[in-house]
Image 1 (tube, rainbow, N blue to C red):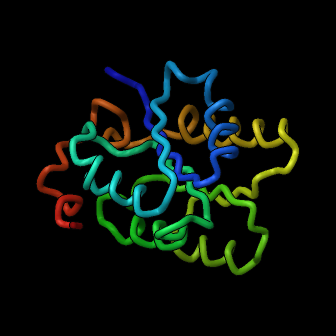
Image 2 (cartoon, rainbow, N blue to C red):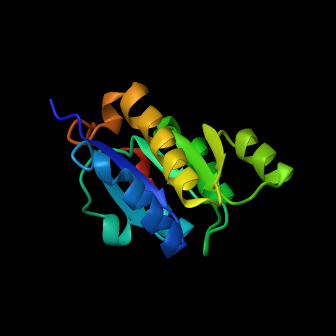
Length: 163
């Protein structure tokens, strides 16, 4: 049984993405991390469109989603994921610098699984990423469709109808 778990990182800041990827480095043998830089790319990845049409089967075990993104913002990405019968099982953690109450409330109204404000100090940021990813990929149990190599064939799902 392949227990590799996939993380989709949706982050437009190259600095923050690099910090997150470095924080996940110790777990690289158990995780497959894909980084995209905007909400449109995230949806293309999830719906297997464009450059991601031939990506391997299965869904991410975790989606780390920034709130303020180009093209399609994080709240709209979250809304589409949680409205989709198949994608709604993917845990979504909003990782953002926004402390605005309306962003927090709206994220939970749309079904976010956790909302984490990015710490300003480097080590606190690394620790937060490790705690979040550790819980969602090591402690939390996920359905088989969220494990790399064990996902159902999504060829006839609603994922293909979202063009």
